[in-house]
Length: 193
Image (cartoon, rainbow, N blue to C red):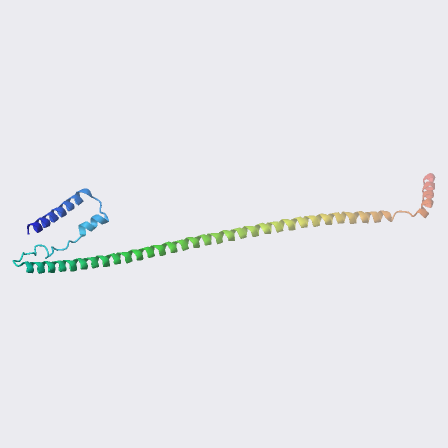
């Protein structure tokens, strides 16, 4: 009886010390502190202070066995409850991890989609630049070809003009057989004058 009172008193004192030291040491609210503040302690067990020593030793032995069985059953129930809570926490953690992985996967896919779109835009811009360059080259080639054609036409025109002038002058030319007669005429005509 005295030991149970001492145990109860020491538990109460420890809890009081914990609460006061907790309040004095921490100003910020953390998960652990919050849990301690909101923790609900189990009400005092009927098991404590329940032992009243019987006069008969056999009855005391059977009562002690009964108390041990009840204690074992309560411990088993508490352990089962703890295992269930841990399983719920594990499932919750697993669910959160899956959500986080899914969010990361979606974010990765969005990043890939953005990169792919940027690549497509760059490819389209590069294609447009290449097309403009190709058109510029074609235009320059066409201009060069036109320039060469016009130059060739001018050369041909000059040749045709030379040929026409040559033909015009050659119509004035005299055959060899008539050449001597014309020379004599020219000499006689110049002497007469």
